[in-house]
Each structure stands twice: as structure tokens, then as C-alpha cells.
Length: 300
Image (cartoon, rainbow, N blue to C red; front, side, top):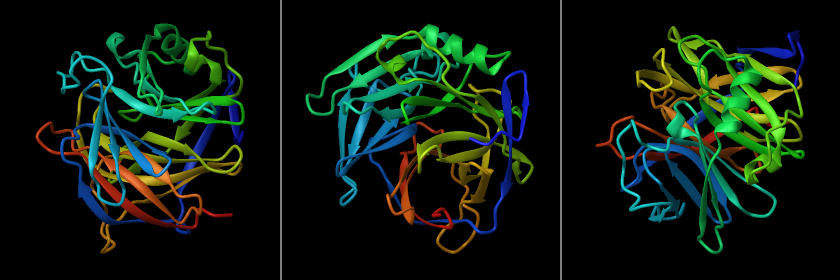
């Protein structure tokens, strides 16, 4: 991670819009039965879509876009905002387990779900200690809003989404925190000054590992001052965090016009020439969509 400026142990990373990067949404499909899509993982030949409004995830066949639900607890139906788990990030550890993390934006949203994809078993754990640690590390005056989780290089990097002009940030922890270990910082605390789209500030909504310490991310421009309240979305960006800083490009549609969706999930191909995005309409009557993207400029 770059270290342009540091104050009180926090590294501030400014971001730029980079004309050398391109990201185009070339096709989209509605995922029937999937609402409030909030994170995306590739597991073998399948994709896993995470819901923030239910104790449920959905396996996606990328060839047919068929949906196979997996209930995590209860009956898996969509819940009211005040009681939903708000799973906003997902990561896979070296043992093959999938871990879903609540955002932590309310006390009810501090759960971690561990899924064994072979057995289909699920273990839910309340982890208030983890979210309190992240809040303290980032020096937040409000609860954290964890929207991205990246496992790699022996650590877990958690990404907090800033709203209302507040910066996004990340904290590096030991990866065993996902299996119940006490949280301990193992790297720098960083904040990101991402800028804005059409006058609306950007906040990180998901992140994935790239090469070494590098991460790719998506960020949405949502006009809200609260991590809980929804707002109008003017677009999303795809970006890269590397040793030189952070840079991004606006997502556009197949015709080159600004893509207006709120992207909440990201998977990137090993070639860095394409990937998948998950878009949430913030409307329980509208299904989540999955999109295939073509990207340029993200390779070394």
C-alpha cells in the first residue's frame, strides 16, 4: 500500500480518475429471486451472490444464469431493514470456507457467517468485538460500514465505505479473526479520498485481491449522508489500489454512456481483461442484476 501522507498512524491515499483505464458493462441479466445483492465471489465454476436483506445466498451458473438458493438461517426470506443481517462482503480462506461479514452499521449487523461450500453447512457468529476494533482503528465517530473483505498475504483487509463526503478506508487484521480470534491490527490503517461523480462523493462497495498487495475495487456515488439510508445513485467506478496510490475509471454501458447502477459486488478474471459485477437497485421489488464487464489498463 502507498504511504503518501500519514497522520496519527493513518495513511491518506488520494485517488485520481485515470484515462488509461476502461471498464465497460457489455451485458446484464436479472437474477430472478435475488434481491439486495451486496457481494460476489467466484467459487470453482460458479458465482456466489450475497444478499444483504436475508439470511440467504444464491449460487449462480454463469452459463445459464440459473439461481440456486442456500438458506443460512430461518426460512431465508427477505427481512425488514431494521432486522436484516446486512451481509455486505464475502471472502474465501485457504481452507475453502466462505465467510460473509455484516456491515456493522447497526448492532444487529455484526454477524459473520461461515459456509462450507462442500457440505453446505453454515455457522453464524456474533462479532461485536471485531466491529468495535475496526471503528476504533479508523477513528470513526459512527459505526463502521464494512463493504469489502480481501484475504491474501496472510492478512484480512476490511474496507469501510464512507458516505456523505467522509472517506472510505481499510484496516488489515490477522485472517484468523474470521474463525473467532481476537482482532489485532497487522498493517497500516488507510483512508481513501476517491473524489466524486457528478458532484456525489464515491464510497467503496466491494474489493478483490489483484497481484501481491494490490486490490481492485468498485465504488458507488450514492447521494446519502447515512450508511443506513438509501439515496439516489449517479454511477459507479472500477479502480485499482497499488504502490503508486489509487486510480479509477467510470463504468460505462455497451454504448459508452455512463452506467448508472449501484455496483455492490465484483469478481475479476485472472487475465484482468474482464469480470462480473453485481448491481443492487435498493428496491425490494426489483431483482439484482449481474453484469459482464470488459476492462482495459489494469494489467502491469
